[in-house]
Image (cartoon, rainbow, N blue to C red; front, side, top):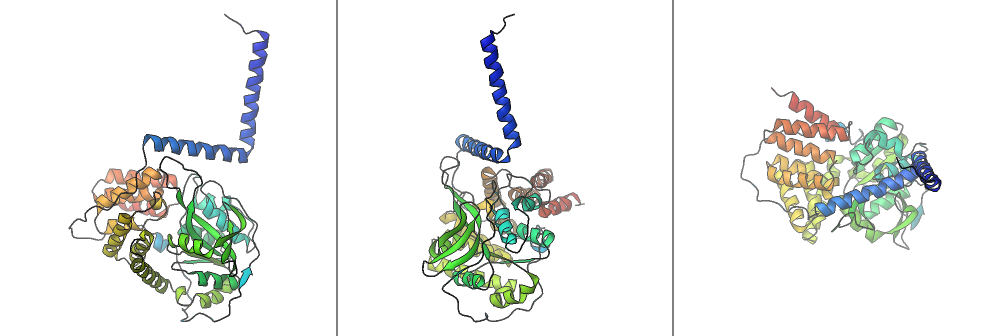
Length: 415
């Protein structure tokens, strides 16, 4: 048996000791884990993109001529109440906006991987004296670290159940003047907007994604808002024009956290937008107008579909989504917005539903929302075993996903 010479033995011992020390440091240092895990995620996704090239999102198929019947739907809209019982006012309380204003910025927090929602909400809650961080939030609403999407309903659920001494409301169809009015009244505002990666994750990556951002000020002289951006940094300026453009993609969604004693002030500021139905009708009218002003704006058509879904006008919504898809949507659109899933499901367009959920799962294999809706498509097709498997897979990704639990219970309890 051949033995190692002393120099080789010492070298091998040194190498093993070095590797062990690196492993020990990696195990003990969460920041080092974060950096390497993020790099590994990028490498994994890139290799997947090479082996299975990314195409644009599928365009709509010819709509079938069938009779539509109602089927069970998830319960998220009913699960999270959207407003408290204040009667709506009719007109905004008049006051003169200052030309600039900056609210005290909460302590900034850099987001973890895929964690802009919890990070932005953590900063928002910190404005009111909350002492937690993004991980306290993600532990409840995003238990899987590689979950790439947090819905506004999930953010609201956290506040209502874990920070109940504060209130939260969210609306759509906002505008720049409303943002300034809210800021001038002392309310930071959280919005959802477009985000662009600096480098591609895979060949032909369009670099587009979603991002939550917290606004804490504005300046008319420079035409900028002040943002606490969990990805780029604290106290950053973003132009009115850029914010308007990137905000449109998410139906001009805005989120408000406030103390109970501030509810009447906020109600007066929002006026007719305090009532959820009135707010949605206003957003629907806005989207309709934007499709007329710019018929080639895919996001205007998408917003029109989303607001029609709210009112359960599914055939019209499906046609609006068709138009958005025909013009062209970003590759990750169905990672974040799911109105088309409902529209195609309720109009019996299962081929279109399957096409977009399969595409969504190709981009985001662990998307609990896409798994849920593929399960409902299987259910409609009579493939109960496959439906149950998808509902269970969705629950594996997020055990707190009430829509998937509802779906599983519904299917398993069928006679």
